[in-house]
Image (tube, rainbow over all chains, first blue to last red; front, side):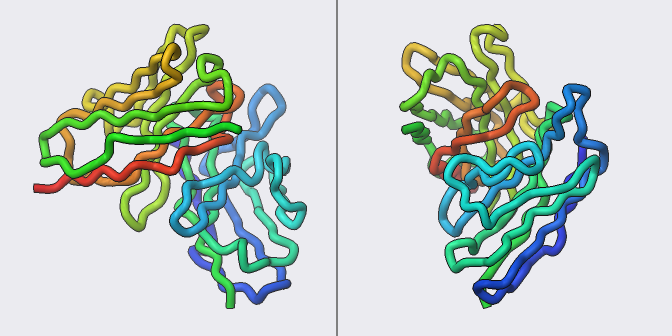
Length: 113
Length: 122
């Protein structure tokens, strides 16, 4: 199984400041179809996860442009350009290149200072 | 609007069985693969299993932790997804989410239900 490792475990950010979360996979997520199967989800307190970013850098419908994703191969980053209070929650990366199983990172908790 | 609504959670004793349901609306259910994902209290997300669509003969896949105990099925006429959980263990205690898969086996989850809590305890 592909292991997804997220850092840091938690992050405390001042509103308006940037934030960055790293996700590393144990194997390359680049498929022969040219796509890289890395996704980011945000789970706000008491809610189900919701999709933020698909295929490394594509924002899902309705996701604010302060969220961006980058990376390739085995190293990926989610960036929030200016953190807002509504961005608190746990962020998860997920891979789908090797299925089954789908695997998630352990999560990064973002809180506001 | 895509909506997924789980039901059927509750308290069950170790070794017991429970059946979860997920009612889908707002999209063509029969077109999509559908998954179950769970989250133990205070823990991260764990993929449980998948049912593919009619075009892929409704084939299923399971996580190693539930294989042989859980069965995923669907009824396209009722826009419903099911998770039959047998031989339940205390470590199966979790919120169970159904999720819609976008773009097949290399795809991802674009919509999730609110989840239903399953507690396995004596």
